[in-house]
Amino acid sequence: MSAPNLAYPSAAPQGAARGRVRTGRNTELALLLFGFVLTVVLSAAAQAALIDTVRPDCVILPLLVLVLGLVAHVLVRIFARYADPVLLPLATLINGVGVVMIHRVDVPNETDDNFKDFPSVGAFDGLGIQQVAWTGLAVICFCIVLAVVRDHRSLSRYAYTLGLVGIVLVAIPALLPGRFSTVNGAKVWITIPGVASVQPGEFAKLALFVFFAYYLVRKREVLSLASKRVLGVELPRLRDLGPVLVVWILSVLILVVEKDLGSSLLYLGTFVVMLYIATERKSWLIIGAVLFGFGAVLAYSLGTWLGPFQNFHARVNYWLDPMSDPYGNTFQLARSLISLGVGGLLGTGPGAGDPLSVPLARSDFIVATLGEELGMFGLTAVLLIYLLIVLRGMKTGMVARDSFGKLLAGGLAFSVALQVFVIVGGVTDLIPLTGLTTPFLSYGGSSLVANWILIGLLIRISNDARAPGVVGPSGPSGPPTQLRSATTEVIKL
Image 1 (cartoon, rainbow, N blue to C red):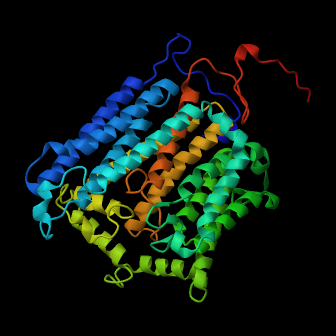
Image 2 (cartoon, one colour; image 1 turned 180 degrees about the vertical axis):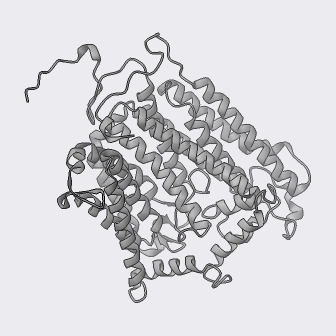
Image 3 (cartoon, rainbow, N blue to C red; image 1 turned 90 degrees about the horizontal axis):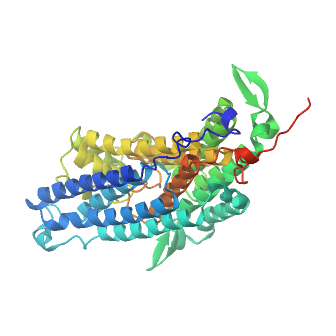
């Protein structure tokens, strides 16, 4: 997606002139069924390895996920029939794999005392069925997005409101007492003891990305201006650095107050990439990387004597030497690396590993669980599914007919890529561990609901881009105009 094309409409989809455009809905249905077959095979293989037999109930959880996927498919046929046919099946497949693996973690191993009781445990026991319930809520929110947001450009009318909502959602956990907001060292939750926990940052990112897209569309020309060239790179004017500095300060505050490196990197990284898409100036990428690097080094240095930075300082030390305290502070990371090493290239096989040796095997470290049982090849296949989601999201941005849609789709797609990189990088000791969850895969409701809403927005933008008949330009929030009703203007220079 290049900046010069942001203000110009794309051509109508191929086939529009012939009066018929393929919707791709049958392809979407076929892919949903294929994903169901894959998750059933995974579930059956895990059950066979655990109890030396395959019971009919191994189909239940994948079937429930398929039913929810089919519900979403029907809504797409009604409200977004020209949308990309690949996004929904990919999200449903990853979701189904996550449900199967979460249920598998609940199944004891042969070395556990209660292994003999497992044959009486069914698909409706454990956290797998709870994840299906969260999936149901997520699909409902997905359907609401499709039904309510009939034109993605309408979101730009509420950009400033959504920006304010996003900031408030990010700030709430920081303002709450620790007992209501801190889980596993990260102050990013709203917790009602004995009732539920919500991670508002998952929803804040969606609201902020809508605001970022609208703001960058309005300020694109100003931010594209360069002041001087340094080492072949055209740097922006100093007075135009304000937006990046504001987001950088917000990211540092999140890093310090909420002890959440992942969200800090996600917000700043996505904003800078959206800024690059809008202006096509590499200098913004360099400035963003320098600012984040400076903030991280400063936080690490201050962590030796200043309390709020000590958590980040410790995480960096654990990253530098993950085996320094394998039975204490670095236990999580050390066990994750050992599990990945045990898995090797081909893995131990579904159901044949020991996922409970890794803490938080259903959520933060579910990637290590996959790596142990499916091996590097299986984990790579899962990462390729994420790559396909990102590529289809980027393609949606490329074919969008308006600047706002291009930036929003690009930002949403890149945020998925960055989130997966941060998680996998932390589990494999490429970067320090963070508190982010793996999209669609990890146990929990907040992340799952937010990411299904993200897919809903991408599908809405995709439908608006692929639908036949509309070929005129549009502004950030206004509806597209028909070519036959467009006026002719004469501009004197």
